Length: 140
Ligand code: CMP
Image (cartoon, rainbow, N blue to C red):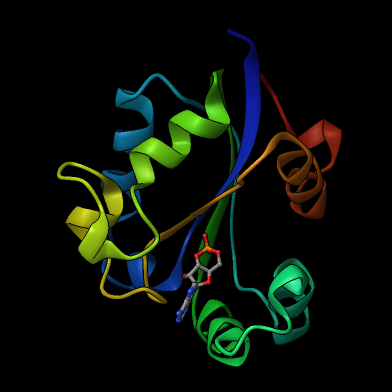
């Protein structure tokens, strides 16, 4: 298995409830390492650009509104099979369908306010990491 990097976002519903540390512990317990991290507030334009792939979806407006509603923590996670491992730790997008022990099962409030985002494939991961971080910001 290859060592990969993936982009993670801890979303505004989670920062509002002070869950950042509990969520990072789940990543670390699964063997993922945080090799870059920044707390920030996305503007509407930044949220629209990040989620541009979803712009035709009916929930796009709600998604942009929510993601720019409060602080987020953007991170690069590294580890063996990191993209899939992160998705396993996050659980299903819909928290009602997420497996026990996953971040979304334990912490998500709804499909939209679902506490975390993670890249879904190697090309997406590379693009999403570049969206937030320069090479100099990433220390593996
Ligand atoms: P995320 O992994 O950040 O990628 C796109 C996001 O859109 C997803 O998590 C959900 O939070 C959100 N999303 C997907 N489907 C819906 C939906 N039906 N209603 C509201 N938000 C949604």
